[in-house]
Image (cartoon, rainbow over all chains, first blue to last red; front, side, top):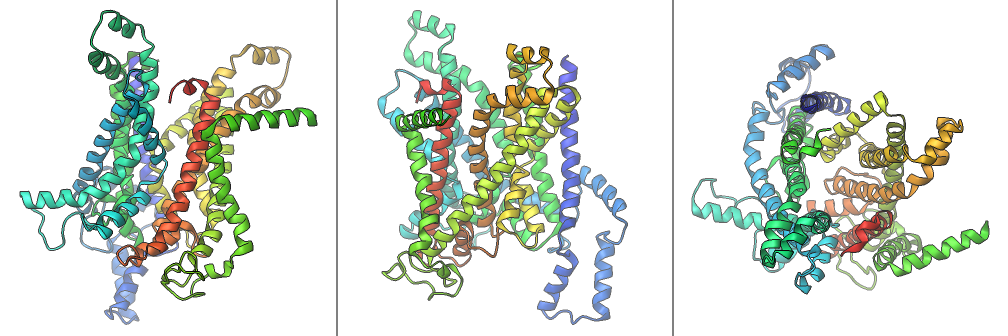
Length: 332
Length: 289
């Protein structure tokens, strides 16, 4: 039984990855826009090309360079093979920049901003949610948690815009956008770090404020069930201090399902980043995807989407693999 | 017949009245609906077209919410844009839930190989981040209209309903009355429609609100990124233009704040209604909070 469970998950992982690669191959090709045409238009706009024979040669050279002159099925298998080796090709707009290099450069920003804010809201939300179900919680807790729940219905980028206006434009406390002040060179010293933190504050705040409610809601649900368990009654009968019952008995057990959601949330961090990064001009993966789409940069779009799907698939796989260890009832 | 209808209507009415969450949510959604329905009676919707009014005027008696950088009256844009957003969400929600419910029913009722194919497809699609796919598809569609945006979004919003409905059907299938119906020689089609369907409708209704809300969220996301419908003024597109022309740092708050407020009312309203419906369907949630 055990083996079939793991095998099924593993097969599904590969199905997702290959499906993702295939979708990535098909969808951009359905687009009416032609990537080579886009490059040519840019050349014309800059006055670098005047059309005619020279232009045909450029088109032919580009097509050969990117393998677009091959039959579709050859293109497909070549693409699949390269993708699985994580060779994502060259960016068309920023040739000869490699897609995976651009990805790796953008990744730390996205992971830094979103992973930290996800962890922060997870910690705060789980605590508040546990408090909501706890009969002896201070009264004010129960009143201000619903506010977070309502906030969780608001898309974070809309809240982000309001926060930028208030804190960056009206009060001039924090920067308007970007990941660091223009003019500074990214390096590892205290000044730069503080600058990055200052820039990350507003996007992080908008994410935390809008996702605390989600974690609180989940935690409350589990906590209600846990509080009805016999071992809790026993802990109370033994006369253990409230604080200890709350943290070591109730919350600790209620956290288990929350951790699963956390792993998945961390996996979707990269794909959730698109809007927040566009609103805040943050140079991460989402920003990269957005710009690639605007300039119809096939390979960049394919590479980024594939990467996004891969991160989600990997985190789901990890959760599925770890979960039976935490809760043996899962393997049927 | 009419009497039961009235009685049920009264019961529903008093339930709404006793549930402040539901009442508040419905009032919020209703006010937005009124804005779209009654708005055109009082406001000249032609002013929602570009270059129909002077640009970047602050709120005044003539333009209650000011005008934007493209020469549109912001209030007129809200009146035209809000119903578009609702229409898109409802359309995507209906298509998504009908698709998801049918697939969930088939998978749960027939089981076996069909179930395996549908469940694997559902799980696979749930893994794929929807916004990434949406962006790529949206960028590939040359002229985006409200309808085809709704359809694209619907194709990515059937998975949650499918999963919920399948789980419910799995347990309903083993109920004594379904066994009875089968022993009585009812066909599968009749069992599905007469015995199982009535019992999953409340669940389908609850997931419909969720799907609609999710669809609007996705749609607004696309619009804010500038990939929504281009012909009709929408709320998200207004925010996109405001962003593009730096309305924020020029202090033109009347350009971007009103659409954001309308959207916040919309999302909070949907959230309240969906939370209330969840409690109705799943009474265990009513105990706390």
